[in-house]
Length: 93
Image 1 (cartoon, rainbow, N blue to C red):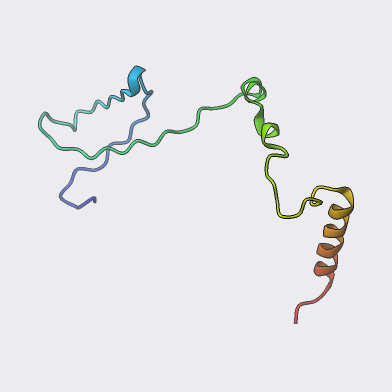
Image 2 (image 1 turned 180 degrees about the vertical axis):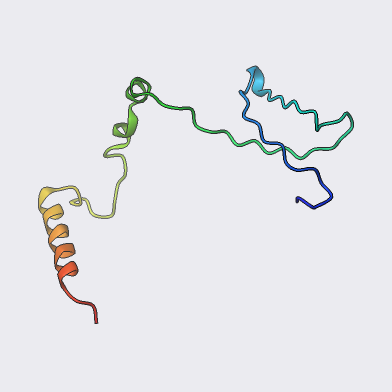
């Protein structure tokens, strides 16, 4: 918990080294100080070739099983769209 008597937070972007080692260097840190550290791993920028190599979203297509086995059929999709279209045209009370 941050209080007024504490130093302002130090925010740095670092690269995790081999073995999961993270180093923070700051002139505001002094030997013997106690510090609370929170690590937030940010996703690396994904290029088109990396995305393709990892399968992108397509690797998840068709992997979720819903409650209706016909949910992906053309006739069911048409029926669902018709219901939604009708709901948009029907004024709410």
